[in-house]
Length: 168
Image (cartoon, rainbow, N blue to C red; front, top):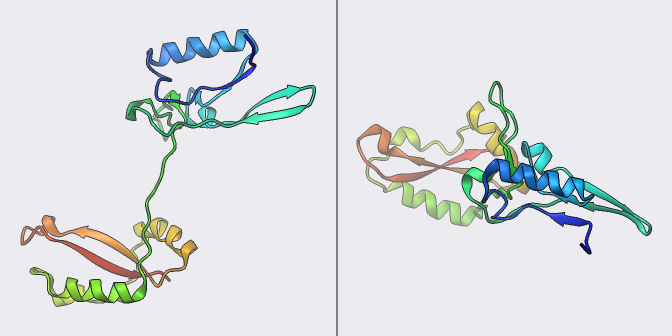
């Protein structure tokens, strides 16, 4: 065929379903074509595959940036089986706000309707369930992390406010 290494991670990886993905893997394996980017779970889909050549060893890690949501491979969790699919790029967006901008946001927050004095403690420590979230912020060393919270659950207002948390 003229090639012996290929990426399978793309938005068409599961066009023919999981069985099509498996059949393609079988045919590539039979023809000694090294391939990466899909698998029976996320660990397999994200694993490096290697091709040994006369000039050295080549590693391939493949991922997709565009994909159907249900085509993403997932690892097993508890009693849930892993999901076959593509190694999909997952991004998290974090915004670090300079302290002077944060002070402006606090002033705006303080005049929002439905915001009570008891919620104005900027020295609140993140609750334990937010510690995993705060860890990523500590890597950037900001003064505070911001949690976006929706007040709709209190039924007094549907405003969105920003609550500062000191990362300790």
